[in-house]
Structure formats: structure tokens, C-alpha cells
Length: 238
Image 1: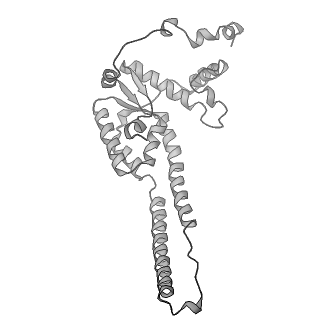
Image 2: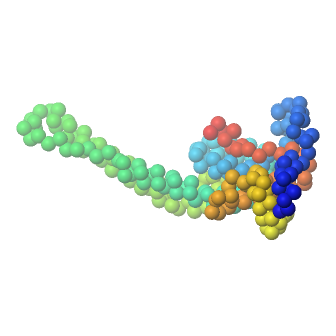
Image 3: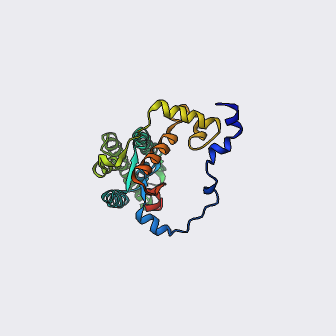
């Protein structure tokens, strides 16, 4: 990078001053009716924190937008989802393990001299009943662990996506890897987002930049306004 380009870094960040102060008076409701929506990785992972009813609401909304050709997923987002979904399932597995480890213990209240009192007899019976209930509770938790282990790629979220998103919704980036790396490195020199804050990541530091470039290509192709945000969280209030 030449020295003069470094001196004029603001020209690279703000190539057109007309966009700095421009204000467009448009109804956000009207924009939503005609815009394209692009899902990010957090949006795809968010349903792991929900239940069956919310997943069904998400599916209905997504299918409506897909039928209107208004919902897309950058290919890199889908790959990040594939990499991170295992950690979501692992967190769930760990939570079940923690529940099992923290099951209560009911200490024995043993004073033989109280054996003739009805309340003492009732106490022993209640303890045995509690122990039996805790045993069954633990068995159910163990069954849950087995169920999660057997999910593989058939967990409720991934299964819904596989049935909902057609191949046409997945956007592949046209720019080659070498060109992406070159442009990304140039932007890092100017500390220009996106991706500049991830430069210290050991892996996938370029991820946000690749997704951003994919969105730009999609915008040019469709010639429409695009929204990138955590749509799932907006829909379900998570």
C-alpha cells in the first residue's frame, strides 16, 4: 500500500460525501414489504434457545419470504452455522449433565427412639417416596442425553432448515479467495469494517468480510434494498 493512500485513508472509507448527510424519508413498513432479507449466523443459531412453537413460527415466516424470493443465506453463514451448531448441542448436553450432578440428596433422619411416633414413620415413607422420584427423574435425564446424542443432523432446528431452505436461497460468492484475501488485508491496514475487529481471531477472522461481500453481490444481482439483522430474534422476541 503506497504512502499517499495511507494519508488519504478517509477517501477509501467515505468514497462519496453525498452519502454522509443524505436523509431518505421512507416508511420502514414499506421498505420491509419490498426488501430482501439476509440471515446471519446468529439468526440461524437463535432457535436452539426456543421451543417447538417458536420454531414453527419461524418456519412459516421463512417459507413466506422464500416464496416471494426475498430471503437468502450467504453460503459462508451456512458454513458457520454448521460449525457452531455442534457447540449449541454440546451446551445442551452439558446442561443435562449438570442437572444430573446437582440432583438433591435426602439425608436419613435416624433416631430409633422416635420410632413409635406416627410422624417419624411418615417421615421415613416420604423420604423413600422422594428417593424414588429422584431416581425416575435421573432416568428421564439420562434418556434425554441419549436422545440428544442420537440427533446427529436431525435436531429440530437443522431439520426445519433442511426442509425449508431451497438451494436457490443459498448465495455463493463469485469473488475468488485470492481477491478476497487481498481486499481484506488492504481494509485491515485502514482498520475498516467489517472484519477489522476480528483480525486477532485464530480462525475465520475473514468471515464477516466474506459475508458482507456476498451481500453486496446479492444486492447488485437483485437490485433491491437488503436487510441484514438477527431476524429470528426480532420475530420471537428473544
